[in-house]
Image (cartoon, rainbow, N blue to C red; front, side, top):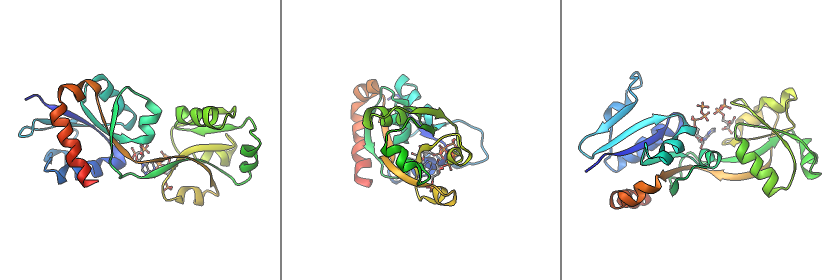
Length: 211
Ligand SMILES: Nc1ncnc2c1ncn2[C@@H]1O[C@H](COP(=O)(O)OP(=O)(O)OP(=O)(O)O)[C@@H](O)[C@H]1O
Ligand SMILES: O=P(O)(O)OC[C@H]1O[C@H](OP(=O)(O)OP(=O)(O)O)[C@H](O)[C@@H]1O
């Protein structure tokens, strides 16, 4: 039996993914050691391997087959648009992709003005404004603290993740429009899906009972 390799996201989703796998008896003790710099972990008994990667890299590993299976946020899956099968909504990491800004920007949206949109997700933002709203905008790519952009005058609105709404509230911004709901998803390499069908199907079926 060959190893099945899992690519998991570092950060917010990591522990929840491990906790879910643990419920199926899939454990990887070494992975919980926060001080370790080790990147890949093996469960010899089940012939599984796990590694943690930066979120946006997870679909890349899965598309190329360097990982058979991945877990990543729907935001990342949409933004990266890789050739992978999305097989399961894991239901944790729930949040929303939204257009946000000061209340005053509502008018600019309403009149389809050519506004500036700051975001960590240029692909999602472009698709939403061009294909859904049929509005021409200027997309400005940022890498974090997106809420700053309308405050300092870099953009009129942002496209970003909203979970509790605290960041928006504390910065005097509002949700102006919802783009889509998000949560963690399981993705599979298309070739692995065929070659390791039985093992992967079994895993999906067992996970489905838990989520
Ligand atoms: N409040 C939230 N903010 C951001 N992402 C969230 C939130 N709630 C759930 N998520 C999910 O968690 C994933 C991001 O987790 P992570 O901790 O890696 O955040 P990040 O800020 O994007 O990472 P980094 O700090 O490396 O830029 C997202 O892809 C999303 O699907
Ligand atoms: O609605 P809330 O519960 O406040 O969560 C949403 C915030 O959390 C995320 O930022 P993150 O902490 O990942 O920092 P970043 O902006 O630097 O990526 C996201 O980009 C929002 O800013």
